[in-house]
Image 1 (spheres, rainbow, N blue to C red):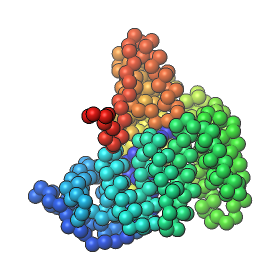
Image 2 (image 1 turned 135 degrees about the horizontal axis):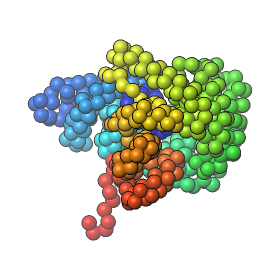
Image 3 (image 1 turned 180 degrees about the horizontal axis):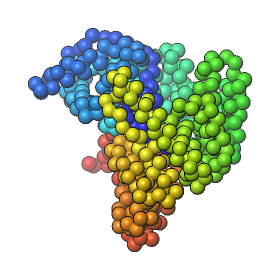
Image 4 (image 1 turned 45 degrees about the vertical axis):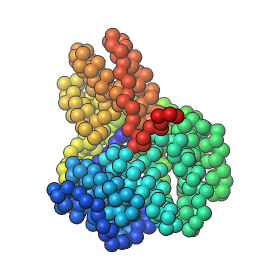
Length: 447
């Protein structure tokens, strides 16, 4: 439920790597030398420079990342070419570097992503191109937030707010402030973040958008009742926001309800969370996320287990159909099952004490190289193995999960519980690996 680790493949690109407006078109500049065997791939990469506008950029990005192995090679080659060019005659213009930077971010090659996107920012700053400045800053906000470099997000936002330039920059400043407020909230600077969020609410005359931001800050601070109140007020404001297109208004209401469902779970109000998801399912019965989440939270709290299993199986089938459609359209190379949904199905079967049935689903979820690297999945697998009297394998699963990084507040609490399980089994809990930042460590004086 409300899992930050879901969908790092193409689906993450579709949702989270949304492309901002403002990329221009330019002829291909001269390319740096590459190995002879790379010539074909280099020619493909140089075509990225010709993507005109957000739609073409999105198509280029989608085409680049759908074959993950090839995408990794492409990013590595692109990085080699761009670095070799030095300060002039770079092979990739703003658009090419932007697509490669977003692809690198998706592939979690943070060092390459930082290089390309910083390159974009430098180019947009030199030309004082408003749309491109916004595009580059957006991408860097996304990258550094995903890396949990929240202090860097604050610095970047402050830099953007201080810019003087085209009208596109001025229009984006409230949203840069939003990124800064979110980062401060995640750094634990609740008072600063809340004061700034309330200031934006007042400037917007109590508008729905920044009320959600206020709710975000309160949720990060663990003030669940106050956060719920802010989101509910945002819903009311959305109903009154007649200037919005009806479709946009309904989409934003659905998003707010979905956030509320997760917030209610955080607050321990499972029935209220379920009502929000049931309302969403009633509006969109073909949305696998809503069905999976409702089934999962019921199962996690030992409620309506038969209905939970039914919902999760429907989610898996809906997800499969959506991916088959994407594959038929040429937007996806393979159809696989969502690790999150497999984990949910394994978990509800575990709750029904059908351990032999649950284990294959939990193992398959954990084996997913993209989305299986999450503490919650490995915790579930460990619990199932322990219930099957496989203590050593259970400890191994928990230890594996403990090496994963925390992706949200719930992971922090779960980590404590998993560490307690490992200690109870007579072992010393492992620590998570240091996250990849994509930046070089600062040298001490004299180094």
